[in-house]
Length: 209
Image (cartoon, helix red, strand yellow):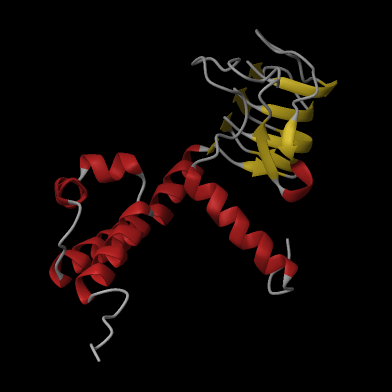
């Protein structure tokens, strides 16, 4: 009787491991990093050394994330996030491509908000700039004033109860940003996957948010 061959050979498993980790790296980073671009082009017959290159690159990328957030925080810049509403206090603040589904409170300084979807905005002083935004409720309180290309409409999120603020095809927020793209947070495939994992962990009672 002939010996049954394994379903996957060692090389097959190694190829799967490399591609699994490659696909978790943003396409822009894969394309601009010479080593990652070379591995993606190679496509198969990877070695253990090449697998370690990918793993080391992942760690290198992750180590850059916190300093980048610290840099943006120092500038008062918030970009591409979803928030359940918050108070913003500072001298110079900027929100870009954000979705805020509760009242946004602005205190002190000068705030710029562009290409975002906001439930409502309240400001304690004149001079804030709000442009290319959907103020969903139409409520601009105290000194908050709409600038150019602002409007009020139901944004038509996919499933906000499950934190999915992607836009339906018929959303009035599509194509309304200053760069011709959509208003609000711009989900990447990685963000969608992380969201799925977070919701699953919440359902199991392992995390709360």
